[in-house]
Image 1: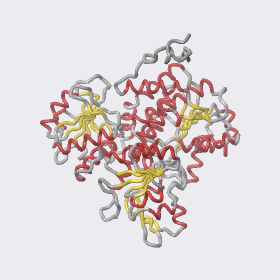
Image 2: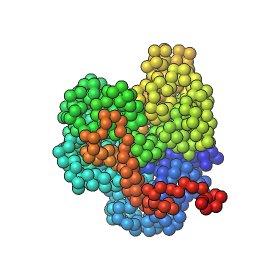
Image 3: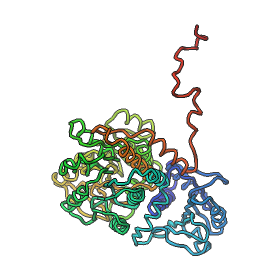
Image 4: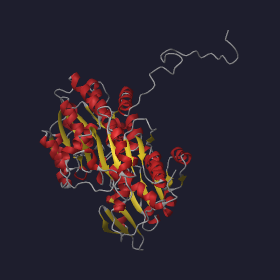
Length: 562
């Protein structure tokens, strides 16, 4: 249930869970947890939030992934010691979420060692037990190598698929261009491809480049064309330099490199096996090109893989965009006027998989959610999910927070901005330029002023103002570390499945947007179920007859047919 009875406790629980997610870059949904100690109200609020986000409350003797400690070290120490006796490779995150005083005595477990900023390993206890304190800020050191190691240990599905590619020798002699948000998880994907036998070259846009991670890849011997300080012209030069290495396969996010190759390097296309694209907005452009007969290579629609869309878009983007938005709001100076408060109201523009996830997370955090959706079927889905539904210009009038989740330019028009409640916060969970019509707002006379880190106030001539976060950029990429590592493990496993498709059948595939092989989804999902400590029903066990057998279509409702 939404946390409404005690705003202070709701705000504490929200801050604690967001600190955990920000520090570890890990998922809340589908993880098994237990809470130790704490006052009844605090336990209830934290339990409601975690389960509302999709986490699984574990019984006393069930294995867990997360141990939330709220009481005193005397309560938590024996439980931590007991839970530390676990199978090798089964990670346990111990979260010191003591509300007023520490709930975990870190010194009780021997020397600790940083595993990544804000996460401590306890090697004397176990190589698989880590401590996080919600009351302590992470170190400022980017610690790229440590973050890469952390991501790699949390990506078992991608590791397994890459190992199969390596064992089969399919990647030998293949050059792969990776054009994605350059952070630890993408770096691990690049290194897994390299280790499996490919030559890997990397590109990233300036606002999607973690320079420390880029340097870590360079130190590992990869060619990286990326800099967070590159101008627009320099970014184009870097992108073309990556294309000039003549990759056989492109792995893209937004299809910008695929489209640039068609525009500026058409001679490259006949030498390519194809590409893979993992975003809705990127595929939208490529499908238009295919309809016009302008697509010169097969492009595997990784975004449409069920193990991508159902999880990355809904759970990963839902968690990471909402958490990043609220983290930025928490970082605003106290003098900045804004409407965000515990138990407030939010409007979500768009109810595809991303909008569905955004709405789910906002409601778990206690927001009353109104959805604006032009597709009547999706709008009906939102209504059945318990959200109010209204036209966007109406929905924003009383909203404290407005989040666009469409991936469509000019979703938040000037008229919508003018309709927003004064001091509303506006952010983007989609991913295209001008999803908030910033240029049009400026042309209409709005002024912009910086009010905090990655936050600006847009004020119209009549004095009406709203707070826009991160220049309308896709908030989890430009203001955070992207989607949780377990989610990207699924998405990158699908990318690796697309690589296999192109290696094995690229010459046979049409010059079109190609659906991913359903076998990729099934293999990815089964590997992920095992990584999450469960398994699916064996194939065919629920069927009364083999699936390939033609069913008897005669009715027996009136007795056996003659």
